[in-house]
Length: 184
Image (cartoon, rainbow, N blue to C red; front, side, top):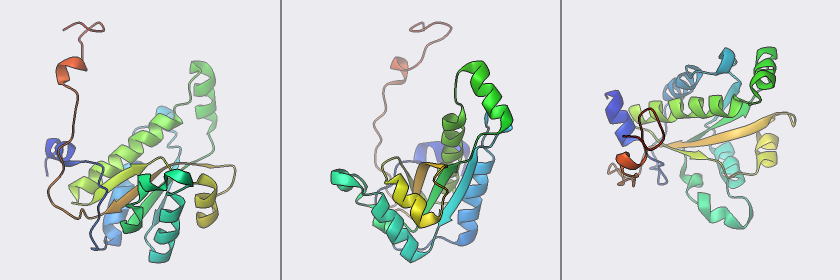
């Protein structure tokens, strides 16, 4: 698939089929995450792929926290999850944060997640990046140190339907400028 086609086909899939995902495809998706750029090349991530059926069910339950569990009601259908753990900052990352007054790790982790969902799309695998989950329970389920944070979870599975939904996007003319805000 050409890159522009991958970009057009990627969407937040919330209906997965029963088809399992091959472990080598999950490895390819995670390897794509490792190729993401990061500030000072810190690579502040660790990826945990959950592909065991029982653990998938437990992680899916963690994504349905509180009274708003209906938001992620589709997650029990997932065939895998990739949990992105933020690693403790390196020395160069700490220096960059002090010098710029900005923590770059959320951007870095977002870029890694974007690479992974784009690679999944390229392989025909649907994905949905989740931000709603019980972090403490996820840490407990996956033996993650309390001092680390779970920054994103990606649900994966083959789409139930091959027809991608139409995505609403703002008109391009309203979201770009040249050389100065609002300048065309």
